[in-house]
Each structure stands twice: as structure tokens, then as C-alpha cells.
Amino acid sequence: MKYISTRGDAPELSFAEAMLTGLARDGGLYVPKKIPTLEADAIAAMAGKTYEEVAFEVMKPFIGESFTDEEFKGIIERAYAGFRHEARAPLVQLAPNHYLLELFHGPTLAFKDFAMQLIGQLFQFELTRRGEKVTIVGATSGDTGSAAIEAFRGLDNVDVFILFPDGRVSDIQRKQMTTPADNNVHALALDGDFDDCQARLKDMFNDFEFRDGVKLAGVNSINWARVLAQVVYYFSSAVSLGAPHRKVSFTVPTGNFGDIFAGYIAKRMGLPIEQLVIATNQNDILHRTMETGAYTKEGVTPSISPSMDIQVSSNFERALFDAYDREGSVVAQLMEDLKDGSFTISQGAMEMLRENFASGRASEEETTATIKSEYAASGEVLCPHSAVGVKVGNEHLSSVPMITLATAHPAKFPDAVEAAMGTRPGLPPHMADMMDKEERVCKVPNQLALLETLIKDRIAAR
Image 1 (cartoon, rainbow, N blue to C red):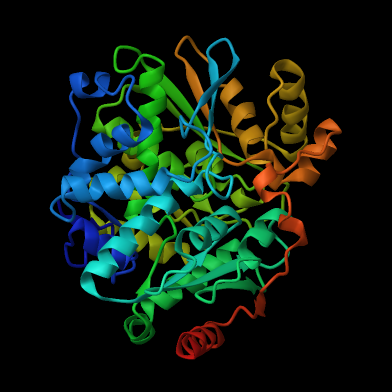
Image 2 (cartoon, rainbow, N blue to C red; image 1 turned 120 degrees about the vertical axis):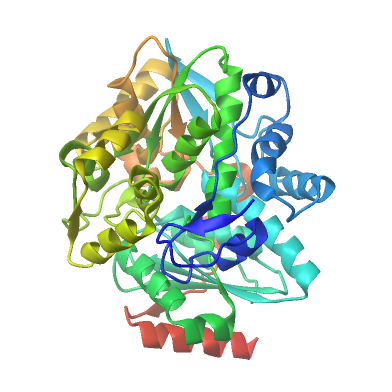
């Protein structure tokens, strides 16, 4: 199994090489050269298996020779051992033909744990085997940062720096990033929004002297291993509702497009998915793009669902690569056009995207109303991001079962939930003292040179 860049001008890599590299040296994102498929019998055989067993069957074709079967099975077992639900990703029925996929039972109460716990184990195993150290820099709109810190904290062969937009994450999200005391993790509050954090991260990857000097690695969803880990719960949930003998649909609250792109990969692998619905909040660039064919940045307006406050959806590049028949030079030009604020997608490419994705949006008022109404109807307490998904999912219901992804525990966004339903959601008992812990955080300007100097200095000091 080889991996190629979406911009067509970077070397082909193995799975392990692509995982450790993160962003390709031409600025593109790595994708499999060929998408493996699973026969219907293989999908049907997943019924009744543990989440870990399904994960092995789904991900194994993408691994190639990077890990033996036994090595990979051990990595998967260790990755999900800390989850607090035996099913790992349980389904809850909201209404006839509408189900909620709870993805918040991991260590940091967010769906990012499914990918980050796995990638942490993959990195640790591969780096130990190679006798190497790396520097991980990540950008987060809230949940990726805490999941990365939890996955890599305390490891001798990894230094982790997480950039998050100062004042634009929830208090719980911030505390999860700033309270770990391990000396290999560093929380950096950037003066800007998430798109600024993501832009500085990409700048670091494109500064090859810095990149090579600190052995930079990335764990944002630009990293293919992150996307691959998320493919698994599409299979586990769909099979529990009768796939492959029965079609299913999914609604995915998303800002950076990684989670729904994982659903697209599941579909390409042979999972019978009827609809993949993109659910956006008021920062609805993906919904606007699907409606108009023009990807145009309009600035970020802070919302009660901050993890979706994004205008540059990195993983959309992977979808564009397929939409343009894998012509990397075309994708490279579109990304160059985006530097001026927008690009227009060709008619043929839009036809492909609309064949695979539907979309919808939820305003702040609609998100709040959905939290309130869903609690009254089913007793389910939704975080604001999950509420965006449920609202849009309800608009796309059909005779095919709809699974909406619940991306975070409601206690991560207590103010928004309390404002909607009058009750403040509590943290699980094992995290009850989170808000009382001392924070370790460094406020940083939105300047590449200063960030790079800070990172090099802290690595040297350790």
C-alpha cells in the first residue's frame, strides 16, 4: 500500500512513512494510491464483533507491510483500553429511523479520541522501533488539542505543541489542554482564530529547514492515520443496523471535513451508504460551497459550537482530489487560488461532490432550540456540535436509517447547554476536579518566526 500527495509532486510513501510525515513536502495531503474494498460477506461478518476486531478488519488493508498483524492488533487494543463504554461507539435511538452515534466515551470526551489514541500508539511503536524522536505541532479548534496531549503526554520520544485560538475554546477544552503537568506537552494560546493556528502549522511544515531541524510531525486531520481511524465507526454502526444488507445514511457535524471524508472512504470501501450529509454551523462555508460551487472565505464568526468555527477545511482538499480525477496539478492551483480568498469548482467536479455529499446548516438559534427539543423528546443531552448534526439530520430523514454523529460530551460546553435547557451538564466523576487544576499555558502572537523560536528553545530546554 502506497500513499500519494493530493498535489502530485511529492514522493510515494508507505503507511508508516506517511503517518510520520503528516503534510506532504509539496503542501498536499497524503491519500492511498488505491482505495481497498471489502466484500459484502466480509462486512456482514463484522456483526457481533468487538470494536477492536472491526477496527482491525477495516484498517488492515491500508497498513501494508508497516506492521505485522499481531503488532497492529496490540496497538488497537492499547488504543481503546481507556474508553469508558464497552461498545466504544454506542448507538442511541432518538426517533424512528434516527440514531445518535455517541463518540464521546474516550479519555477527553470527544470523537477525536478514536483517532488520537490510535495514532499515539502507532507513533510510540514506530518511533521506538526506529530509535527516533519527533516534534508534534498541532492546531486545534478545541478537541484535537486535548486528545493529542492525552495521547502523547509523558512519552520520551515526542514533544507536543498545541496551538489553540486564545479565548475561542470552551473552558473545559482549554483546561484539558493546559492542566497536564508532563514536561513534553505545551499549550500555546495563539492571538487569532483556528484558521490562523492551522495556517501557522502549515507554514512550519513548508519551512523545510525548521521542519527537518526539529523532525516535525503532524497529528491534525491532515495526517492520513487520523482519517483512517475514523472510518471504523462508520462500519461498526452501520453493521449494527443491518449493513451490508441494509443501506444507512450519516449526518456529520464538521468544520475541517476530516470526519465526513472518513465516511466517504467507508463508502468507497463498499459500505452501502445512501447519504453523507455535511452539517455546518453559522460558519457554513462547506454548505455554501455545495450549493454554489464556489469556495469563498467570509471570515469566522465565533459560535456556541466553536470546534466548527472554520473557513479553511483542510480535508476538503482530499475530496477535491477525487472530484478532479486525482489530477494533483489542478488541486495545487485551487489551493493557490484560495490564498486570495476563493476558488470555483468545475461543473464536473461539483457533480461528483453532489453525488457523494448533501449538506445543511444550523443557526445559533436553531442549535439552541435543538438541544432543548431533543432533551424533551428523547432525554438525550446534546453538545452544540451534535445538535447541529441532529438538526440537519432531521431535515434529511428518509426510509433509510439515519445515523448522526455525536462528537462531544455535553459537559465540554456547559454554558451553551445550560442556556438551552436550563440544566448544567456535569463532568463524569473521574474528571470532576478538572476546573480546579492549575494551568500551564503560554500566550503567543500570530508570528511564524517567534513560534518557531519558542518551539526550538523548549525542545532544547528538555
